[in-house]
Picture (cartoon, protein in one colour):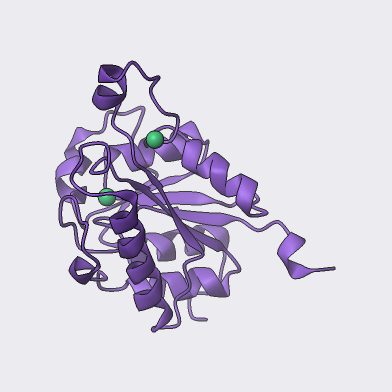
Length: 199
Ligand SMILES: [Mg+2]
Ligand SMILES: [Zn+2]
């Protein structure tokens, strides 16, 4: 049986403030700076057999700050930079929309801007993903909202906007864990699942 047909769980990871330094509307690949611990975190996920999928709101496209080409160049740089450290990210999905702009153009709101689950649904179409055992990690309320809308654990990291955003949760929408960074979040998840820590 081809290995690619075996369903595996996925780690859905926010990009800005979680994988790379938050730059507020990054359209230049040279602005990509991987956050500390991220290669280690992804190597753990690789060792556990997870799909590693980026999910990123990029309303800078709707706002006219940059185009899809720039976002894709940034995403490519993230994937290449991590691969040089033997950390393999399968793909980064992005939402180019912004509700205010859609409404102004008499278009319906999209279903992919986090916390909506469209990017997870697209990833499920493209990869044999088993949602059992999957999770979402990110630095914002919308990332935890995405997790809970998809009925997955939501891990908040304190990098990026995480510290500020950690103040914004109520008792019903709180993250499953608040971790210092992606590596701490992934290690917490691994302990919960009984996975080995060192690949
Ligand atoms: Mg973020
Ligand atoms: Zn969208």
